Length: 213
Ligand code: AP5
Image (cartoon, rainbow, N blue to C red; front, side):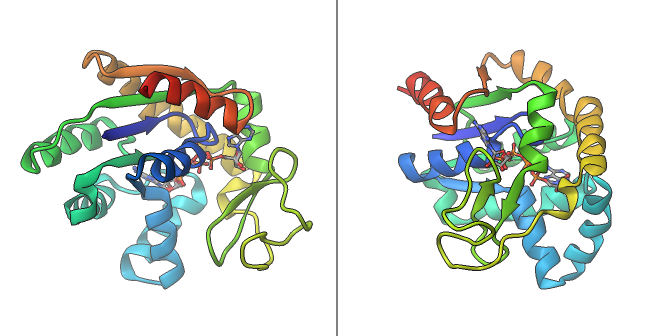
């Protein structure tokens, strides 16, 4: 199964993609995670990406298309993938079409998660992540068992730099201008599913799974 998860920052793309990957035995490809790893490793790509990410802006298309192309070319992507956070601009969507054609793959479904803005802001500003294993929590909706510490590896949790409220608002603005138009692009393909992204994580996943079945 070849899927794309669309939706504004904080809509739950990463959360639902992780569940899909585990339950459907497919690969979770998150451009945000790949870029954060490059930043952490201090690579040239990471240094270039960081300045955009810290400002809540999009990293240039050629950089993001390059890393996604490489990841989609890896053998495990052939058994199925869920793309989380890519594509995000019209040129990225067009390039994705070309990459998939070269690889003889066809998208099966594009899921657009819909969540009201107030809820998006609450979700992002309350998010905490483990800098060691990458597990994501929320102070209210999905708290760790012991406050401030990762359940999996015991590392102190941190707030993502781009989850401060002013940067969150900038990311939402960028989404409206550059990414939302993709909903119309995919609507024309007949593969788009608009899915209500409110409710608990399990409720959203159940909605999604019902459709997949
Ligand atoms: P990226 O990491 O992709 O960030 P994003 O799209 O802004 O996505 P988020 O991770 O904030 O939200 P999400 O929808 O994944 O929600 P999540 O499941 O985490 O990108 C970061 C940056 O990298 C970009 O700003 C850009 O600079 C760059 N970048 C990445 N891709 C790019 C591209 N293609 N082109 C150019 N630049 C790119 O959930 C959020 C929170 O809500 C969590 O705390 C979670 O626990 C909680 N939550 C989730 N679901 C629920 C629920 N149902 N109820 C309650 N809480 C919930």
